[in-house]
Length: 147
Image 1 (cartoon, rainbow, N blue to C red):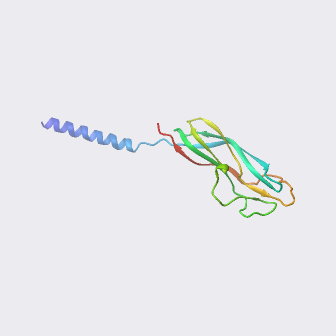
Image 2 (cartoon, helix red, strand yellow):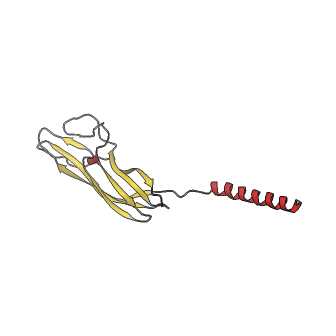
Image 3 (cartoon, rainbow, N blue to C red):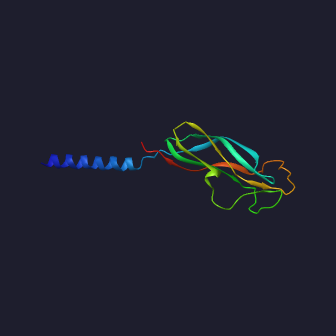
């Protein structure tokens, strides 16, 4: 009887240790990187221009991802509409200003495109000469796909 109690106690202890160790195991993480980004200036009216973005992202993490939201920010653009300067809106991004990739498998690469990263207004109808300096595509959010 003493032997059975010790055996059951040892097995219970081993099971609890296995559960504890598995809880501490490192969970697989998702990681997305922008592999290509291109910005183009598009005439949007007689006095208006806007920047559109295209490019590619890759899932370089350890798990499949879903609902990957990609957008861009112009860090050097102002928030006030001034003739002859690039500016951005202070309202949340619209569906036109971001792209959502529904599913991205591990190692897979997917293209994205969206419009209206930044805006330009000029009363003299002169087009902007160059893109703003600090403009970048970012992965705003993503979820891990359950298997």
